[in-house]
View 1 (cartoon, rainbow, N blue to C red):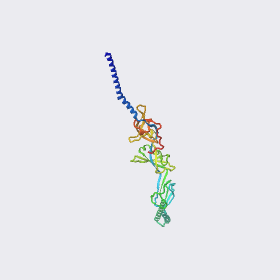
View 2: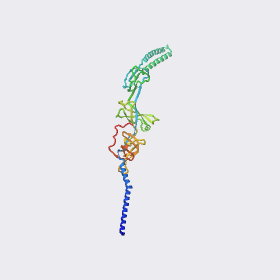
View 3: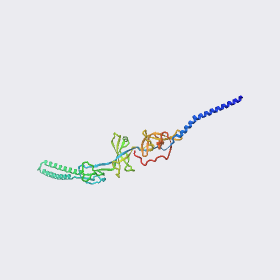
View 4: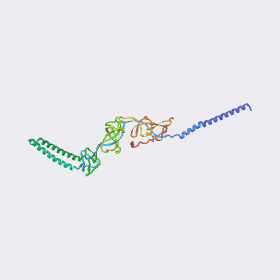
Length: 380
């Protein structure tokens, strides 16, 4: 075999060897480098969470006057229980349950026959005492009686007059009149019934205007004063709002609740609002101020703190993810709530679909997915 033939065989062998080495390296690179990357990418795509469709709204600035919301109780402008000062049998009733009465109207009579007899006796004694006093004055003028006789006659006349006045006062107590105008409640007595002293025979309430008593935190004393305006609603009269003003502030703060009781006066011309009714009161407590607000449905309430989900671009910039932010809440107005801290105007916040979200969840925005606000905000 010639040298040239040997050289050619060596070259072919070397080329074949290098080809085998390259093929083996390529297979190894594919098996241990490219294949895991391909599989990882495939699995990432296959098991990656699908974007959640959510409704989003941008936080905006609104100007709200500061307000205090409270639950109050209505009470009468004037209200009493009709009760006798003197005991006796009821002889006449001049009203029916629910009547509107004027000041001084006669309501009922209690048997005063004994007092009438005492009055007649007292009047007779008074007339006799007057005659005796007149005779004594004539006698002393003529010098036929001492001054002591006139003094005794004068004292007897004054005593008889006092007895008559006492009998008339007792008779007046047994004719019960309305001390002020108002509406009578249910009648709790009948003719012939014995009425004890202090027994409640009916109630009398002056309903126009009407008071509402409600608690406010002690901090409210810095901004709420006499004359502060308020609005009020009552469940018994849905759809109606009543306006009034603060009439008085209690002289002490409760040591248990740290609240102070305020009393407001509200016109009640139709007398539809009654004492004891439940009322929702809103008091304006200062000048309007700008606040960052959101729909109330955007807030997620939890034991760890109130939070919202803010939509932002993902790391690639091609998609969207959510960020959980803890916020400090402010006042509410209808279906919107103020965010005191943790959010900026313009931040896009999820308002529907939060139950499926966690930090960095991919999302898509569904413009038609927002829930309509309820017709009536539930009481909290």
